[in-house]
Image (spheres, rainbow, N blue to C red):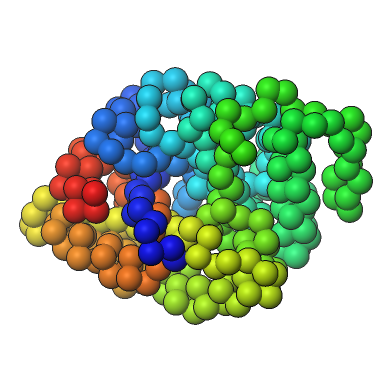
Length: 313
């Protein structure tokens, strides 16, 4: 990582079983307390229980853009399969204009097969989905440049495509790619991303994944230190050890699909969370997308913002 890169923090405000008033309040708290960004999950079915409520990500994000002034925003991460890349580029440019230049494009190839079937999307092989993502990023970058062009790829075709107005940010909004497949996905990150995002489930192999990514950067001629490394970090925080026990037990039960919560998450009182985060910074992470295990409830976001963020400012 670049030696002078600032440590950044985003709050992942999960829309599953999280009512709009709470999301809106948490977004305002993040804006007030110095979080760098707010992020939203891009799932159409709630996980792990698909019968639970979940708000659509882009609509929620846009609403939050109108009630905040400083905090940046994006999807962690948007599923490329859910929107045509040309339409996504137009949506992103519009949101960047509305938000005053605060949009970050977090995007991935998609993975949760049940929601593809539930909403009528084709679910090709992982290799095809990554190839589609690679073409999509090319299209998005070209559309954001504001010039008219044609595109004839294997998966997408455009004729006379143009995106006006362009995004407000210059030269364009940053692109975060989420994924950790070692042969194709991390190579795509090395080629195209400004930010790499490792999911919470990849944390156990983080050092190895960074080594692989560094090698891909060398192969494609990319300066590895130009790439920002981010982590979707599970966070279980409480003001006291006694108050921590119930949320920790809940996280162990509900979020076991990520792996061993005790080994991968940032857990504890604010002071202990600071210690754990510093260890993760030493591994190379400079951008934490905090997946609070209660979904980012206002009191939890406020505790982290008031007691943890100041240690990194």
